[in-house]
Amino acid sequence: MTPSGKPGCFGRALVVLIFLWMVGVTVLAQLISWTGPIITGEEHPVSATLWQVGLTGTPLLLLAVLWRSPRERAIFWAWLLAAGYVLVLVPGRLFLPAQSQAMLWAQLALSLLFGAALWGATRRASIPGGANAVTLLAALAAAGWVALPWLALGALGSLLDTLLALALGLTAGLVFGRILAVTWLAALAAESRGRGWDLFTGGLTAAGMLLLAGSGLSFN
Image 1 (cartoon, rainbow, N blue to C red):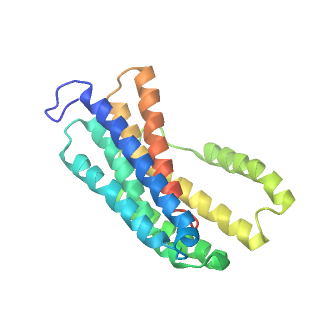
Image 2: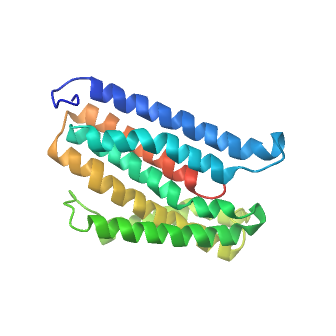
């Protein structure tokens, strides 16, 4: 749908263009974080992340507020909240690579704060379906099995490193799921455009969120 609320392809094209813009900006920010010490001898993770959030969050904020179609607006809100999550995690980039545990503690605390604020702001939101205890336990079990090879090889570091990383990943996953539920899934329940388009658009929405939120975790 277009800004006037009439059906059309412009909304779909705009979603794809914004997604590609986010990919380009995020990749550039990560390259600056990785290559800064090599090229200039200085690290710029904080400034690179702030530029990333600014360049992605500004158009998303405008579209989330001004766009009339509930379906596309929900996508823009999902990506905007993911960008906001990255912004909240910025203080974790102030730590040195040797301070990995301190960084994990900081990002875990910031993720819990963001999650609590998100939950409080959306506690009355109507969420279609919803996860039950069996689903959550199955997800935790799957995560444990996936982590076993790295744990056996010692690639996850000390036991505390492993527990902190798992706690941070679980918290980030809950934040991600909550954002997706109150934005895209709620809009999907109200307006479907066919199974094919719904799967494509839903996958694009989730991919954009993972791109942004994942870029804010760890050092870079």
